[in-house]
Amino acid sequence: MPLLARLSLPVLLLLTTACQSFSGLEAPEVSLSSLRLESAGVFEQRWQAVLRARNPNDRAVTIKALDYEILVNGERLARGNNNEATTLPALDDVLITTSVSTSLLGTLQQLQRLQQNAGEPLTYQLKGSARVAGLAFPIHFDREGEFTLPMAPQPAN
Image (cartoon, rainbow, N blue to C red; front, side, top):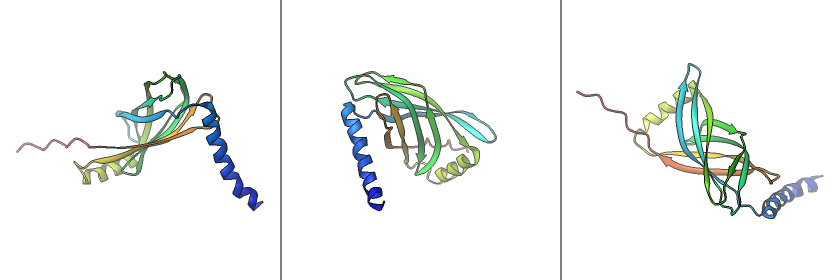
């Protein structure tokens, strides 16, 4: 049994790679295009997250579902998903609008930490998986970048 357990992971990885290779598809690239606060309540906030999905293939690809999380400075800000099928034209990109929610307490704690480093670049990470029509396994993505929050206006004297 231990030999079988040791062999199962490499075989699974080989099969995953083979399925993606035989399909002849390159993985679509998913990145964060914008994040905008839609509403804020006592216990949660709703955000509009716009993701850019780019198709590097010479044929159209359909993303059946997305599951992702957004991290800022290594801490999870929000988690979201989208199960509306989106067709990406060949060698083109599409914007996918989703909604995510955050808890008030988590957001306040994160904003407090961010204010301590006001004006410094912040890192963000978008990671998750996409289910693509024609592939048996989800494709994982992990994009990182930086942004700077605008400085708060200083009170006039």
